[in-house]
Amino acid sequence: MQIIEQHSLRDTNTFGFDVSARYFSAAQTPAEVIALLEFADQKNLPLLVLGEGSNVVLLDNLDALVLKLMISGVEVSDEDNDSVTLRIGAGENWHQLVMGCLAQGYFGLENLSLIPGSVGAAPVQNIGAYGVELKDVLCSVEAVDRRSRQRIILSSEACQFAYRDSIFKSAEKGRYIITHINLVLSKIATTNTHYGAIEKEIRALGLRVTPKTVSDAICRLRLEKLPDPAKVGNAGSFFKNPVITQVQFNELKQRFPEIVAYSDAPGAIKLAAAWLIEFCAWKGYRKGDIGVHAKQALVLVNYGAGQADELLALANSISKSVRETFGVTLEMEPTVYPDTTRVTRGVSD
Image (cartoon, rainbow, N blue to C red):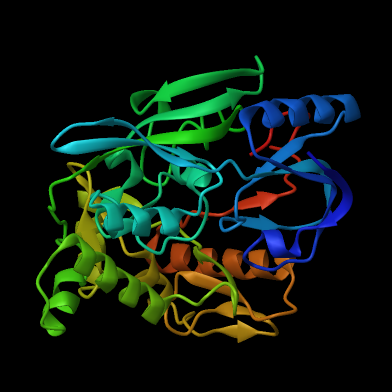
């Protein structure tokens, strides 16, 4: 277990912001995670956990120990004729996991194809796409509790999953370091195509609807709209889709008949943030090396030499115009570091 001083994080965040960490190390086992927690205590520094850096904005150099989770492994822990339970290391790549499950005939993740990031980051956001969320297939999370330095297991219910939210992001933010997740997947090839243009895309290609063609269609749809972080710095969707009441939506629908929205919980409506942003004329906007992607208004991009403070200024301007136009508040998906209100000794994301 190597600990590196003054380590550049440019290749550890998908925006490509060139900031450094005072200390950096990778953990391949839960025991190494605990050892690095103890090292951070000895140095009286916060410890920041990063997966693939696909959902963070690194604003400045970090006076912290940055821990990159590289715990690997995918194993079958239970199985019957209809389903399989998998235990997966937090350091595994999410999309590669989805592809591997499809190849094995394990279904339920195909709508989450091509979501960037690591397995360990997935529960924090309760990642979701095209009508499916991680909580639909997750049965438990294994983690190190920073307070007790013990390994624990949290059930799906204990994770308090909500739309792009969980206990790891809200009520117990920073307390747990996820080391493994346990998923229950189906061996029966059912599909979910009711959200977005999935089925239309499949039919246009003259294909039969199967888990594999659902995954292929979603990959094509995402690649058409979302830039490759290896080519253009981005963190995918930058804003959450805001959820409002049915009464609020009815009022907006009268003023903006073309507004795009989806049913959410009873009495609640989820607005398409991309439509709101595009209506406010931000799609394709660019100033210097920071901008809004030309094909997807939800994606803010760094074209090369942009700075994080410029990106956040743009995000604030977009939020302000949406709020003034629609009376709706946009919430960022990525987490900003350093944040002195949230990164304290021994407790961070």
